[in-house]
Image (cartoon, rainbow, N blue to C red):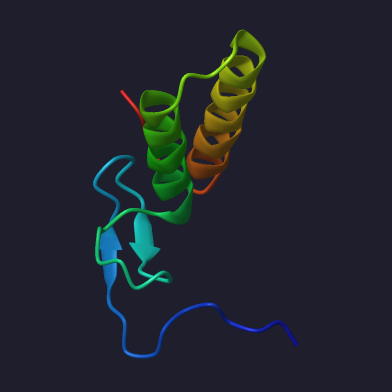
Length: 78
């Protein structure tokens, strides 16, 4: 049986970025689904560090993958 990563008594919300219904599994209270939370962390990494072109390409690919996962789960991006 799979172990649930959801915190007990946590409420659901619509992700502030993609709008899909999500649950706070990290305890941050930022109202972001896990994919959008990952995207924001990668974007922060890009802005905080002097990345090489290869690292930038890798970061962009990770963002595309996370957005595709969010869309697959019902998220929408403008």
